[in-house]
Image (tube, rainbow, N blue to C red; front, side, top):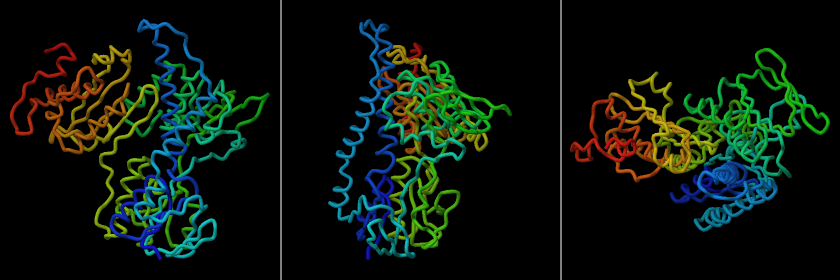
Length: 481
């Protein structure tokens, strides 16, 4: 009998197994298919590879602006997807997940099919092997949701995109959250006509409203059609080699003719195969129910990652996995909070967020907000990427950053600075006094911090509490030094 059995070989499962083993437990990890989880196999990694190619196409359009002579590259979509699949394989080789786990003393059962509970302490694998454990950590992730309507079988999910043989001339993307927006941005850059349909009032409905509005406007400038507040999809029909999609909008029936429909409309957990009832583990709306300690309704069984329906992010899954490993072995000592979780999307332009949105912050705190456009940055002018902004939200009482929302070139990278400062509990005047390199996109954080410091009537302070000069790189960026 194992001390801990981890089911799932993605970020949550791997970190859970390693942490439990680090604490001295006998650990088994079970993965039904390939190690690495959704992110490595058909999520973040291939999406980022696709986005990189889209950026190169975009940058080639600027050749003439930089005095470079050359034709715009043609997109070989089959070769592009071949490279994407190769990148996924190389990431697998780099990580060496199974061998790393085994070197650390974890017993790995990979490519063994679904694990199903027989009782509260036993699971059977796809090859009929039976494993018994004192504790379990469920990290089985999720899958792309497929809507049920006539003709839904003609639609693709994001996983199907990696197997396309050629670039569709027209694509309708159903769903305007992170995955839908990233795929829309890439397809458009490669030359397809893209139309995004979204039930919510705006794209990226979970993001700050400024980000949603900014991405929508950027999409429209690039020729991507955006329709929000739709009433739903009625049906998809085949018609003369194309697809005809029927949807509702403002009470009217509308139709679109397209070559491909991609559905990105949710990510329910992989709960069906587990036979949770045999272990008395409850699920709700497609996700396993857990408390703040990641404990399920059966006290010795924990869950982490996408299967909980909480934060559908790799970084969150890894953190939850490690925490579940600790709590399973040491008792429920620490809770999962997810207070500072930077995230973003590789659209063009990129966007990134951390902390509270402006709407959330104003509802809970007295706060001040600064929005600095990319046009204030010398680096944006140099590189020819002046589209975007940085929004910082700061408490008037504590002077701590409550949230940050950035849209523009390298937004996700820039955001890491703000997240680090939030984790370090820095005051806005301390952030304003950082000597950020010049010329960089990251300097926009300094511009926003300086603006807020002035609005709050404070000057930057060193860590020793000494008053610092108001003049810095932020003023140099604006020509105010």
